[in-house]
Image (cartoon, rainbow, N blue to C red; front, side, top):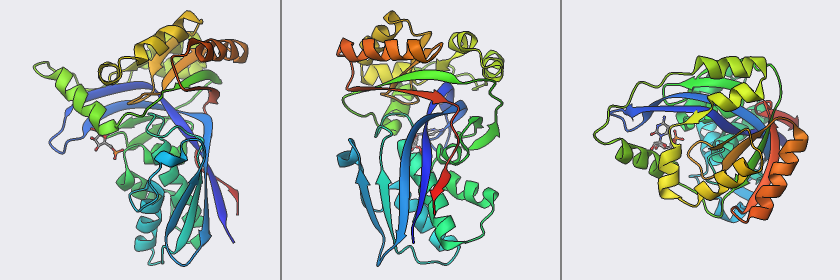
Length: 299
Ligand code: C5P
């Protein structure tokens, strides 16, 4: 008996970052959009807790108890007095350390899979609470769609989306550490007043209308200068996508994946081809959003 959960990646169409808080985190106005690139986590009863991973980036995935999937199983087991004696297998398609919440996705998927396997009867609110303990982006991976995240990004308000947005993602040759990008943000902000993060009404309207041109005009990512400072070659990838006709080009979250918005699937395919030919990135994928959150696909 096993349970498989499919879980999407995300792109941040707005990432407004406030000053560092006393606890080291930053208050955010974080507009998440789930996109159709998926990991699948399968949980099977076993003698003890074990994590395996398959996929092109599998070699970079930690298989010990620091993996968010393992931490999710342990957190749920502790709360519901179960044994976390399970094998968690991650079929990984979301880039690792890419700014697309791949680790968070696996945490949310493992939580939902273990919950289904053990029949805990946990409420959605309880699952979301555990997600927030696991990491700032984990609650969004559970809910999917589009949402505004405030606080550390873990307090979610679902957003209406009036259409499908077509994206191209360029994966870089190496990862970026999220804490390192936030530290670089702090360094670049030294001596400046950092405004309170606020969601852009123009951006929320563009999402609600499903209007890609309006969305392109409104996207922003306050972590982008920090990501570019640590990874200057990303500027070349962004320029290549813009030259290929992307409506907008931005770093996804803390990067280094770059995201390019297209008006429809044909132009997305053209931009993807141009990015592949540019030699400025490792791989290129197309995906559309919003995509559903973590979902049991096999039980
Ligand atoms: O919450 P999560 O574990 O994903 O965060 C990883 C790191 O990213 C944190 O340790 C912190 O350095 C940084 N972070 C932050 N402010 C946030 C979210 C994350 O500074 N709102």
